[in-house]
Length: 148
Image 1: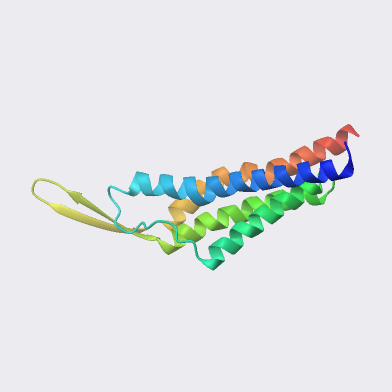
Image 2: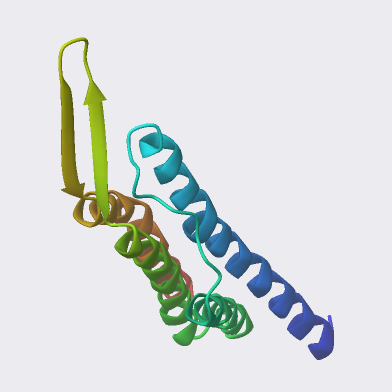
């Protein structure tokens, strides 16, 4: 495989990997959060495509493409972890905008309104999704080093 073909493959796989991160953290996770809390919450709004949001998406795509292009070097796990962290920050940014959620519980004789901050709950839950994305690139890199 020639150099141009390897670079094209790395760029294509990097863009695909970044697109999957964006799809997961920027669209599916906020969508799932709003679907779970949607019937009860009045404070969740859809994602707005602002310039900051689009710049962050570009950074995620760039980092994942660079990580694929530098496969086998020490920079690859660092860049992969950074792209996962940026994707997580997109989700935290979304939750930070919609952080105050008001839940209304209606009974036959009462109406109870509860207002709470969603950011600590959602960010803590999303950490469990983020941890493998940050740790696994380093583990695979060190395994590859141990085999050589």
